[in-house]
Length: 508
Image 1 (tube, rainbow, N blue to C red):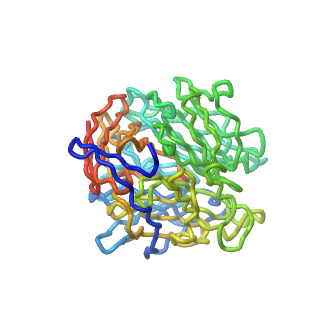
Image 2 (spheres, one colour):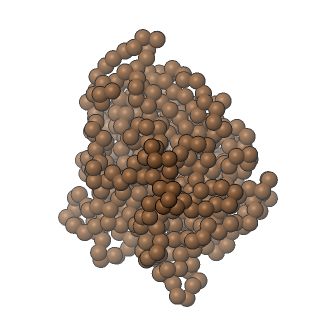
Image 3 (cartoon, rainbow, N blue to C red):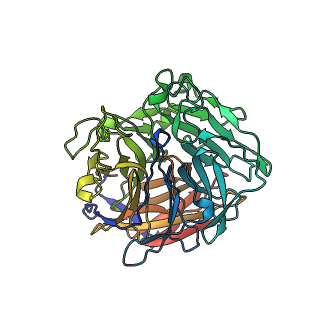
């Protein structure tokens, strides 16, 4: 189907129409109480933010890592006037040493919990409602004095509790470190109503991002890991662990190509429209966009970075020509034209002389031909602070994706999406079953004529932080669409006709 034509069903009648001209994105800064991610070399990395509703009003709160400063929870008090957040951190969450956090409903009670990564013992916090939290009792979650920098979770078949994976980066206790002293990834699998002792996924190559993903759409999520070449130096690579009863690494014979980079973050989204998730990987020096090849039969990803214009390898403004350093990456349709865009938080590790110090965030806008064009400066997102974690989320539920960015040794930044003339939208929430209340492992398909947007429900990726809540879809000028869910057990829901510009909640 031509990219300049939209087809959709309205009342059983085929309706044709040309999409409106895509609007140029604009973000306006909004004030928020000062919060900084700070600390020594153990906090050069990390600095994530979790976006999730913890008081039941559907508006996402923000829980920001602080490093040597206490982590903080910001209550979302936004209304029609814009974005408003107020600090309100319960004692249980006012922790130091926090590198990041991910929202997850561990006990299946439909109240979101938090997996908190730290320099020190990691913490699983149970949500009690009204934004109150307490450490879980009875889960037998064994942690230690690790340097945790990556997280992902999935529900394996027949389990009420999620399987957790934590990347523990560098062994700080090794006297020969830090180089070539990468710790292993720790895998926590359920044993009934508690966790078995962690299983070490060896070798570990200093994970900074990981994601459980059902890359083949066969019903099993495998673990993709992006590793930091700065510390493994040589001999390491990106990894994909097959989540069999005894996890194993995929091999070259199966299609997994050896690949090394200064891996910082993973973003996953079906960009090509074939129903399979593609990936965007952040790094020092360049960013990689790889498309999945479903015809290969294995975990084969083809590099499309240059063809798509997604290298983002040097600053596009600010006068610093040295290589860029990417951290958090996120796909999202920021102008609701039906095409996913890419945000990348940028910033020097600390004072690395070979990398840019004036390193603005990227906003790569997808064009109708599938290439991407830089719009960060025009959109108002070209901050020169040292960005780390971020959340590209609709924070005030107006159908537009907003942005929060955690910075190292600089205040947290908050941006409201005020794009004029943006397209139509849908916000979609899922209600799962059997302990997996978030329906992690589902695929949501939104069809407008012959084009289908696909979202895989996952926990993980990004850089040290994630979000939970509504899935956002841009619809362009389409006023109607069809939607269905493929649930974690493989059950395929019926296509349902829906109207644009509303919030939906879908259950079995």
